[in-house]
Length: 95
Image (cartoon, rainbow, N blue to C red; front, side, top):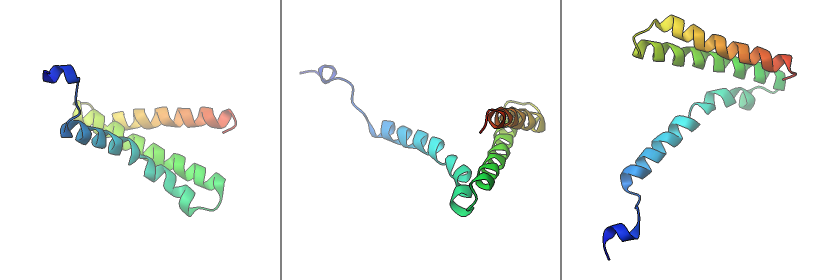
């Protein structure tokens, strides 16, 4: 029977790509989780986690703006500002 009759096959390249995507999704969550591992007060851990998230958003926004030819500081502030607005909305809703 011809190879096409067996259907598509996963190759090593596919597994490597899947692992890369997994790493890109999972690794950025660790800095956000760290306060919960080291701080006994839940409220303080949440606020530290939010602060770490804002720093990460600033870095990501600055990197994206730099890569696309924009102003790094403006891209960073835009991303962090959006994150801060979302955090404020969550706090206002009781979170």
